[in-house]
Length: 443
View 1: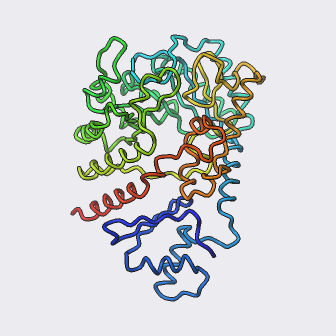
View 2 (view 1 turned 90 degrees about the horizontal axis):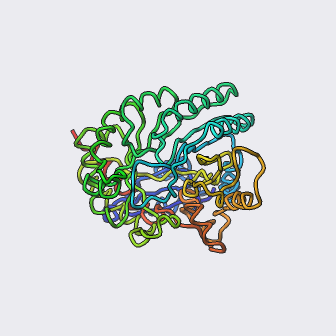
View 3 (view 1 turned 30 degrees about the vertical axis):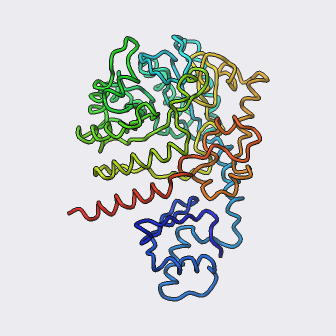
């Protein structure tokens, strides 16, 4: 036996406790200070005969993946599984934008706006494209995106129903489907209808309390949107699994915790999941907000600060890393497509537009231009675990080189764009540990 190369150790509570975390298995172990030298000795000499407490510790370390067989080359195994997960393409994943039009005028939006909506011809082509791909798939997952997809709700109803019927005809599994919406039009009736059609999940954005949100995410006529979205959340959170996304930059960073507290006060927080995401300057549409954006290391520190404050307020939603050998983004997986209103195919949400420059093909034909083939191959070629710094990194199973689009912007680099977990994993585990301990002490 030998120690896993993905073991990390974080002293907390002034060193009285050490939290062990294995980034490959996702296992967490609590080690008291007086036992830490013994654990280190076991990891250094795992084949020595052990008795009593030491034998118990060894078994726990084996069960958590901290100790692995001598014959296992874990980095090579992770690279192989990553390629396999990405290339198997057993699920057809369609992110469909029925329109790029939007009723909001967000000041940081990365998309090039267009009033075009998916034509009847393009809708038929989308169904034919899905039909062809489902012959070789085992599952179907659909995400409705935009622009603002609820502006085309009648089209979503029709296409979702037809896609569900295609899945049934091909006898493939229909995975829970998702809609990414600003939440302004999504009331209880719409949420109920979506759930009936297999759309069980929704992502809705709130960028802080009303003053911050309404300054950033207003209607095109300048009217605020916060109160209506929160009212809709109160009615839809019992119908759909809602993720409330809070986008953060230097403009709103000091107030984002307030919206979580507000959701808590209104009885919504226990029904939704809240995630935080950094605003990034993606393309020409966002060039003017670059100075407002945080890099991943700064954002990691901000996340730690936010979660510490929420935990102090008794709010226990703590983010934890997700182990994913295929990568943190579907863009690198076979069978994953982003479909524009004109039928162009893309790999990344941020590439989505009416321009074919960054496209990888079209739903109208299986043929692709030289440029489209090159765009597709660039995503297929993204292999962060083969990079000099990413391959041996103990954080690689929860980072996987970060965002593929960002990593590909720096050809020849020795590593990708490190995910935030690279900078705050120990802090976040400590916050989660303290929150769990406080919960146990409650009467």
